[in-house]
Image (cartoon, rainbow, N blue to C red):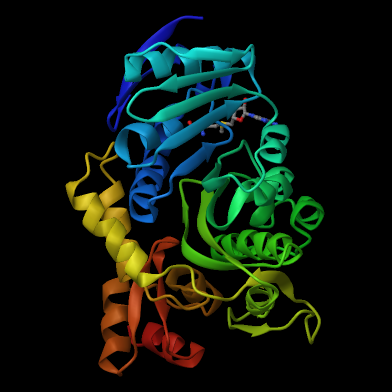
Amino acid sequence: MEFVEVSEGLARILVPKAERIYDAPVFYNPVMALNRDISVLAVKLIEPKTVLDALSATGIRGLRYALETPSEEVWLNDINPEAFRLILKNAELNLGVEGKPLSEKRVVFEGEKKLVVNLDDANRLMSEKFRYFDFLDLDPFGSPVEFLDTALRSVRRRGVLAVTATDTGVLCGAYRHACLRKYLANPIRGELCHEAGLRILIGTVVRYTAKYELGVDVLLAYYRDHYFRAFLRLKSGARKADESLHRLGYLWQDGSGRFEYGQGFLPDKPNAYGPLWLGPLKEQKFVEGLLEEARVHPLAHKKTLPFIELLKEELDVPFLYDTHALARRHSLQARKLADMIEILRGKGYTATRTHFSPMAIKTDAQFEEVIDALRKL
Ligand code: SAM
């Protein structure tokens, strides 16, 4: 394997030379630096002692956690032997110490902090390390569902689970049957698909956690660059699990673009999309903390800071109004977002941009008011 050295945050890593990222024997995607930046900031805020990067590839994510956060013990795991060997190289490069093999498949680096590099199926490792990790990161190819049960064994009962899902085609309704199989949920297509996809993902995690008598608080969940990401704080207890389940429900949308949603374990009328999470997608204090950290931390991606600013400003209510889609549905001309927001604010409503789409707004105004604002061209 030929390598090139790249820097990201405080880490330097060797990555395989390849024409296209998916051809490389070990995966590294520079676009995901924003995902890793936000994750590093989140770990700084959460202050976990033990961290698992369960699907580590080059090791970049786990190494950044070790180098850029106060965490004490970081595990980096991958099933691919080539990835394992590369993570070992990258750990030596960054820590400046040699690892001590505990077995053929596990090497420990003891320096300022402990780093463990492991070669195994993530499900087997997570089964072994029962209630061990304060922060557990699942960053798979595609869907995280095949790792959820063991992740919930391995994360502590008040720990934080971070999940990425890159199967947006599934969660956004392009492959409906795959969504029914993997997430046991009916996805929606059209302008609400990204927000609904994110809410289906969270709703699925909530249903997995409930059986272990765990509830979920969403610290932050977002959509970006064709992936979903959620930081979920677990809460121990049957009542907490029930409370989280009560925040699941369904979405309906008609041909005019009007949507409604309602909580409930089962839909109370036909043509429902979901089940999906109807609770908040952020804790405002958490996002403000991320922003404060982002202003002083050496970030790897130039869009990380403005993206967190956008998340901070966004009104956190279920479902957005896509001005272009609504204009199309009503044979109107699309207005500038800034004008729409101004009109709605002028009428006393809250209205903001949303990170889900540069053409959409979030508002507490009724559907008719939004259409009315569009008509006033
Ligand atoms: N987290 C990495 C990052 O930020 O650069 C990227 C991880 S990549 C998307 C997914 C990785 O999961 C691959 O390196 C693959 O070898 C590994 N993988 C796939 N199935 C696995 C399994 N069952 N157990 C452990 N690793 C697995």
